[in-house]
Length: 565
Image (cartoon, rainbow, N blue to C red; front, side):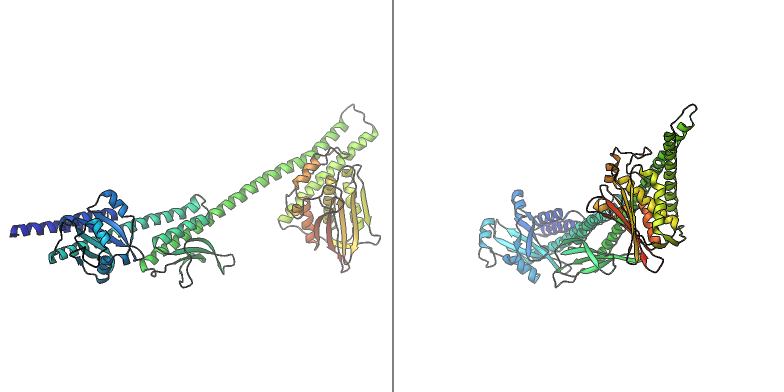
């Protein structure tokens, strides 16, 4: 070859190498880079077929990554068939030695697979290692099919130059791919962290997505997120991805720390190699995103709880106002009706009718008094203004006075009172305990069917005095035996049953289970303020009862028992 021919060849070589170098500095897709490299390598070396094989993450398999010189359909199928490094002696030798491997006659060389040689028609082969910063990436194959080819030193140097540029291009393309994937994953992690607040995404789902992203980003074998439990001394698992860490591997932990408190920990593990400084920085960022997601989710839940409590408070306030209006309107309407009739000019009523009307006015007035008393007592209890003036009180006399005040509500119903002949003394505020008895007896009247009696008993129980008020109603639902003492709580089923009852008392009241849900609440608070206790029971033969116990005046403990509503 004359000097001009050599110059033209060298110029073409320089152009091809410059072209490959441009790929090395570009940020295009890895597959595009590899396809361009094998095409330009074939143009530079006059090889009939050029291919690139890349090592996988285990470094035990060769991944067919780019092929020039075959039909596209064959190339597509070829890329789906990884090859064990141990089954490919030429690549193994190039990777182990870091040197170019030359096969002058593929059919006679002991290192070649003869079935493959016959299938592809290979005559001569050159294999160059692809290395970058001391790490083997794979191999570059040059195959001559049309004739045996004698590879010169210049061919070897040219191929090594191509392999060096190809390794740079592969490394850059991988970096670009990984950076773009990382950027996308970080964007997703930020989005998931924000969704916990913005859209109310449940926290376990958010953390599950984030730990999976963290595992994928650093190619970890597995990872998990644990949150600190209520004791603050342990953690519980809320999200995990990948495989569990084997006993021989200690996961690396990245704390989830908020100002002034420890929320949990992000743990990741990898058997192949420890995480590098850059990977640790990424995982610290993921831990920060997870912490943000936790704080946002908890803030969101707290806001939701606050909204729910506010809505419940508004509902209770509206219900309470409605109940107050209803409860006050009924006795006022009765008083107004009876008084208007009595005062109507020209009307003459029989003495017994006038008496019944006056008794109705008195009963309605007593009902108003009890409503107001209950409201005032509940307000005092809740405001911390409740106070008692205890003095010795005889229980039998207390019961009789309280029953006199509610007798008009009983109509034809009778009270069965049983008190021990010996005086039963307790130390208490008589007005407050009278309110307890009136509330309990009124409650029993509401739930006792027809003309069934209300039973009131009082007795000495060891060092206590116990009084009981018992009705013969439908009883109390088992799950409501404790709830009935809560403020504003009313038993719906019994209310409905009573509301459907056609019976009316002497004043014309329907004996439905109305009320504001304050009576039993007030009873409990007053009894407990006196050092006693109150509870409800369903009785074996029907009906329900309340029992109250209070300390006595002689150093013994006395108690009052009363039936439940």
